[in-house]
Length: 490
Image (cartoon, rainbow, N blue to C red; front, side, top):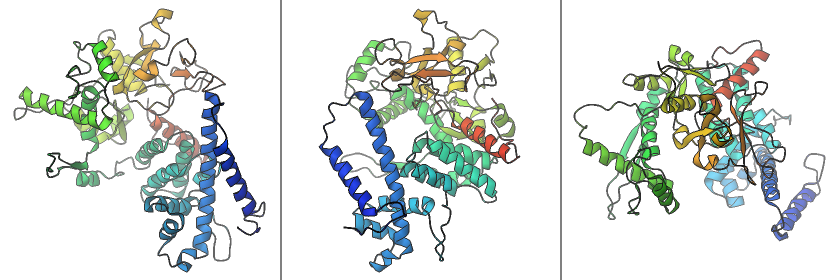
């Protein structure tokens, strides 16, 4: 048992640890069957907040261990080795905890004075329980890539943007925010370095094993990924091209001859994993390519890769663009891909909503979808990360309720999210955000009461992280009297 010495002058360590043990034991013994669905969700969220706060306490203990040289006193080679042997955790987990303490812990000078954390706003978010270790790791990875020569003010702004984003997004989203942030800090495209991407690109077919299977490894550059993802979106959908199902529809999910009823039934009995579907879809694509006879004759036009960029990015040829499959492509790669494509001009209002598509005739269905892909980039339900390639056009005000098939009453929704919109119990509602809202013209979704008792209409930020970065940069730099001249033009 620990002594009763105070850890920070406000309470006894033993008392608090005993309280934690008692609380956890009580929760383990408590039946959860009487909780409502909303209470289960709330319990999960509160537990997560507590675990995140506990990680901050863990960082404090790591700092104390290092500053007292406890790992060396116990004949451990490093703090990582100390954590592995003491806590019986993996080396990867130990490394994450040590790095988290290094970046967000409060360290001390030789004279005992407390120093500010290396990532102070990130440390504050951890203490609040708003972000966890994976968020911290994502923030730290981006901060390490900030180019030399960046001012201290810009570094501070960058860390604040990342930590603010982490409070409301996933660690994966923080990484995407970091990509857009680095593009702003290094508009010439040197980060990530294009030469390094070229050096690391590759696709390796390993030796065929006794089971006749071949291991595949390597790295795709952004352009290769942007070309591959639309192929998989078409050919690797659940229910499509399943070699284990003789009734699985073959070919392209967007084929006009496709029996949608048969596809739905095939998808319901499709037990393949996502990686297995990708494998089968790629195999079909290769079969189609070989049977087409185009190899050895001429290059195919990369017209199926839909890429969105701003006029400013086009003029300066810097930054990153987004693809309809959710990928991120350097502008230089996007322009190279567009050399043999047919660009389409879409005009948007100052809120980023489509006004015009550059065709000489009235908008047709395919043109409307292109405009919506450029504007919304993916499913519009808050929190959904389905890219545009996995969505359908959704009537914001349903057709049966008088909603017109018009660009101002349409937006993108994936199949599963579209099914959530109904008037029954648990149904979601959608509407066009009014002009006085924070996001006028965008599609707002209202969750049912068991998810959001306040019924607050919300938009989906996951496909517009570049706009969040630009807006945050503007706000932070304007406070310092330096307007951001790199904001994306809509």
